[in-house]
Image 1: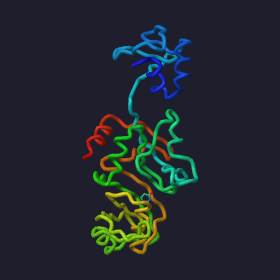
Image 2 (image 1 turned 180 degrees about the horizontal axis):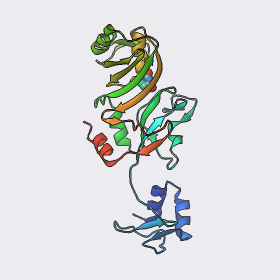
Image 3 (image 1 turned 180 degrees about the vertical axis):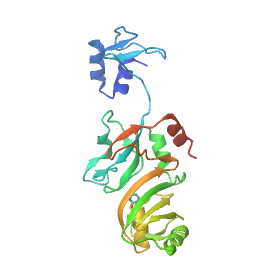
Image 4 (image 1 turned 90 degrees about the vertical axis):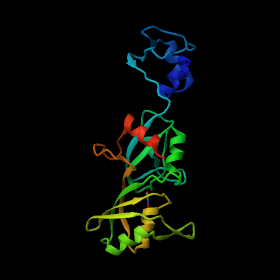
Length: 232
Ligand code: URA
């Protein structure tokens, strides 16, 4: 791959800026200046101002979404969650969380993976922590396991069976395998309850890192990426 293309993608900058860094010898290959057309080999060591530059086609982050940030362009107001990730501006969120929902969201530039994880065909189970207005009753657990009726785009929709697990009064976990707009809130409405606080804590086996403060993020590790890629 050409050096300017390599630098453009790795540092997520324009091709012009990449060419400039190469020309001004801020980028070196094996400690030597090169021209922008140089063909980078697998064992070349590329540095930018002395720091190693590694090339990865795809980037995967887990972000602990704060309330107030939006994850879809359909929501008009609010800063996009992707603006929290400072290193790159070519990323998009996988799936959506409401503006007031917190917790785990994957942010990537891998369109195929994003498409797969959000496709109803793959049924990845999402786990949410819920604080609700009223305590959960035994019948609610049964209703969820049978599939509650919600209204989606004006039409009645029977949800897939979902698991509801009581933590303590007014606090529960809900596990769902689909992602209709406002689904958890609508499911709680269907059992005459109301979601007061919602946080996604897991997507399949990918669990929100408890060391991640709200609004912070980290790259997924190799095992986590391999798990997501292996989701059937
Ligand atoms: N269900 C909701 O109601 N809101 C979310 O953000 C996610 C799931």
